[in-house]
Image (cartoon, rainbow, N blue to C red):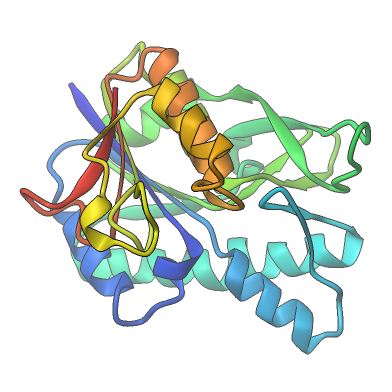
Length: 256
């Protein structure tokens, strides 16, 4: 059975012109499906309003205690529930989850060496039993935000791309998993200033070359690292596309 896992990034999540369209397309997908969302831009805006410094390193957020509180409010609260409400409007019976809910995703706090990211989690386990129950028995579509937990009472900020990849890898023994990362671009470009340079198929060696040339930087790095990890771990289809990438014949970059 095919399972679609769709990750939508902050630029899409926070754009009222883009979000409804992709949620409608997601709701129309047949069969079991999972949505994973970010929301870093919104969290950064709230942090600025509260005079909490926003710290980023290599495209990843450094999460101190104040930042974690903001991430929890924004990711698991406002964004997650608004997405679930919109999916219900489109007749997709969704359930909003953090990694702590039903012990869906357990993580451990990342080592402070060589960089101390604070309350950031690296995923250790995905509860496929619960997810299969949601997907197969209850016919619910999980909507997962970018938070996990350590089973010791601590929430952890966790990259949404990493969550999407971990879910795809964990569920691929049970489904034919199709993983799609949706952002505000159509995929990976050889030249960011040239819309005609979209790369339709991307091999790992080509990806490394693009990094060396400085074409791929910042937030795209963890996205593609996670995407290639999922592909190498047996996920049958991994692609990166734009807000229309769930539509037939949409432009996207397919990893091979």
